[in-house]
Image 1 (cartoon, rainbow, N blue to C red):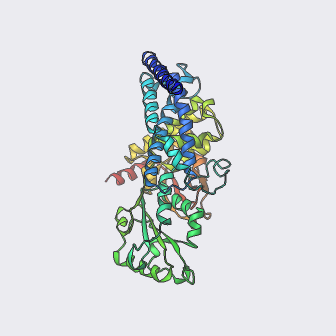
Image 2 (image 1 turned 90 degrees about the horizontal axis):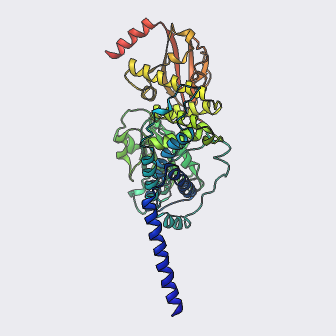
Length: 473
């Protein structure tokens, strides 16, 4: 009896204390600084759980939905923290060096934004205990513990949910579908340069996928009708065939079914096909639901830029650079090429004046292309159009206009050409005198090491004006 009374008394006392604390909090609203600290601590907890989830095989589709919601809330939290924490450090003091006006950020709504981000993250993490308990029962992946630390810009960022969905489909048994031994076909559809091929290569490198499929074959979509039998293993084994469609040319249904008939004869039971394309129409060949790869959200993209631009340095030690980087990332409109190029250069020059100059140059180049071509440089780059890069040339060369004609190339086209070769990193600081004609190259540091190259030519402004007139007509 005494034990029961003691328990009831403890419960009543606990509820009374909770009531008083809640009432006090209602009267004394936390300051912006306190909310920032609470947000920082909660982000640390949530990020730890998400990183742990990234190292587990999650077959439960509901858990993947919860992981996706938790990830989105985390990046929104980082977006608020990365905006208002540096402003809190800087205060109202203007920057003596550099050209960025930090007062352009809306300080009046700062407290509300931080509080809203904190509440959203608290809501998303409300059932995190149950998620952690279920996560403990998921098989752990075998991977190098140093892969994401020694090479900060050589790892695939994000895509945890999409990657897991692809792995789950590839690891599923057939269960009589599709019929007649035809291979399962998984379409992976996404826009230009959003990381489709990088995701697929990451999946193909997974230990469980490599164990399940003794043979992994990469095929160009344009060669499916003339692929040789020598590409396949004899005797037939379970094979994963990755078909990449690089062009926008539609594929005839008869050609595709002929390709599947060939696979049925030359591959073992349980073989599967992955279609990689930006064409929505190719999703009709899928026998399972497609996996869609979208561009990173603004918050996720900004976080990735921060991670790559600062490397092993702590952004908290460079609040002004953090805000410059945030503004620069916003101007890039989600371009992974621009992000990788700029972050690599900025990481080696943690200087406010240098970052401010890079921001100013990028803005002027963006505005010049919007004025001349009516499009952002990202859009011009993605579709292989002409890009005006005159502003990247030092002031002494302003009598010439530099135009870049982009052409995406594959892994086999990275050999040296006859023209002088420069990288995007060589020109973005605006301090290198550009040759009259040269080849501009960028190569991804992640498999399959995609190369983007283009020829840059200098001409007189009058010639460029006629070029603009022709393009507009």
